[in-house]
Structure formats: C-alpha cells, structure tokens
Length: 312
Ligand code: CP
Ligand code: NVA
Image (cartoon, rainbow, N blue to C red; front, top):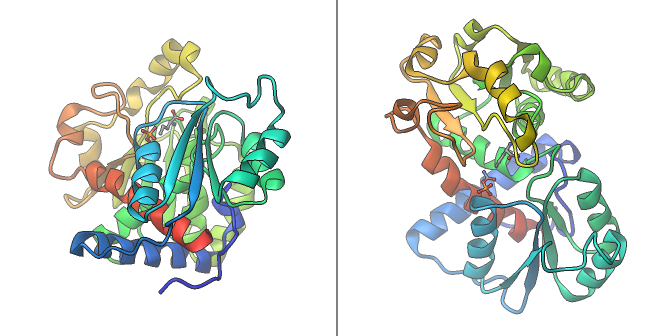
C-alpha cells in the first residue's frame, strides 16, 4: 500500500532517509515488481511529466526512469545538457525554477552533488539523484533489493565491495549498509579508500543498526562475504586517470580465484554495470552462475518506480 509518508520528498543521498523510510521504499519496490510480473496496470501518473536531465551518459538509469514513468501513464522528457541552457547560459537556480513550473519531478545525473541540491532547493518538486560524483542512491536501493531477493533478510549479511572504494557506488553502499544493518567491507588500495568524513558519519549509524564498516587493502577480507561487488575502475569524468587506476587496481580484479576466497560457494557477484569485462571482473565471473547483475539491472526500474510512486 502506498501512503503519503514520503510525498514531496527528493532523494539526493540516502543519508537523508531513515531506515524505516528505506524499508518502505524496498517494500513498495517488491510490490510494484510483483504487479509488473502479473500484468497489473495502475497508471498513477496520467497527466504527469518528469524532466530527466543528463550531463553524463546512462543506459540503465535513463531507461528505468523512462519506462517506469511511462508504464504509469506519465510523460518523461529527456534533457541532455548538450541541448538545454543549464550551466551554460542559464544558472542552475533559474533552470530549476522554470522546470519546477512545468514538471512534476526532476531527475539529474551529472558531476556535482551541489547541482542536484540546488535543483531540489529551487524547483519545488521532488528531485532524484540519478548519479553524481559523490553518490548513486537509486543504485544502492536496487542493490539492496537484489540482496534481499537472494538471502531473504539482508540484515547481518556482508557485502564486500572490491575496487575503487572512493567512488559514488561504494559510498552509497556504505550509507545504505549502515542504515539497513548490512555489513560493508570496502577492499581497495589505500590511495582509493573512501573519504574518512563519510565513514565517520556512517560508523555510528552502522553501530545503531548492528552492522559494521570495514575499510581495508587486504584482499583476504572477502572471506565470509555473502556478496562481492565491483564497479568500473574509471568512473565517468575520470578518464585521464585510466593508466593510474589500472596500475593501482589490477590486484583487485574480481576473478574466480577471488570469489573462492569468500569461502562460501553461495557468494553472489554484483556489479552496477556497465562493466568492462576483463578489467575489473573476469568474463567467467560476470557470466557465471553466481552473477546476479541482470536481476540487479532490472531492479533499478522497480526501485525507481517505487521511489517516484511514493514521492510524487
Ligand atoms: N548502473 C547505472 O547507473 O547504469 P547507467 O550508467 O547505464 O545508468
Ligand atoms: N562509478 C561509475 C558508476 C556508473 C553507473 C561511474 O560513475 O561512472
């Protein structure tokens, strides 16, 4: 059942959401996924519009927002920053005010977290962070749903992220894990450890939920992991760092041997995608029986639909 509890809310980072609110979003996600599978049509967005602003490329996030909004009878409008004035001739504040007069909600994918914050402050409609350099909150929702589908309850489970520990995906996993009682282990070279400020904010949240955050460069720390997760070594906008990242991260590639170090044949493999097969993950792992990456990608749509249904 969808209530008015989150109506009008933006999602800029999951730090702004309580464990109960995240739980509610996940429960609605399961409901809308079931409805989709059973062919139930609800059309709750007839006559509504959403602006989808993209400063960076996207396949999953864009398609999740477009199809989820469209399935509910609404009209999504794609706005590439190559085409609109945002950040070029017109300030973010002014663009936000204009879009807020025309649309029921806004999604933003781009570089700066500040941009999505300004859009939320000035538009007066719910704004969703579809990825910034700092956070990827809608991804983390889909990741948790995927964990729950596999293990029932994700509380007390250990998700081990191996790779660029300072990137948007790793940071969002730390936040959602701390809130929802999932142990998060970040395994990365010290140069790519997550920002200590974020870890300091999340440590007491994790203690309260009964989980723990471990940051280490030791690959053996994957021992006991229920899920091993990786992401690209070079995030969008960091292409100039490719050689440096390859040198730092080559010992952290997720291979069959690394998966075996979990000590559990039931350990699943996760990746937010897109993947560079052969770089951060070997083809046999991502194509193998423990890979859940396609479920994870599908779950982007159900979680994003739930977010929009509860907040618009
Ligand atoms: N995982 C994810 O955000 O994918 P896209 O970049 O294709 O949107
Ligand atoms: N860390 C990656 C995630 C892509 C979905 C990036 O920012 O490019």
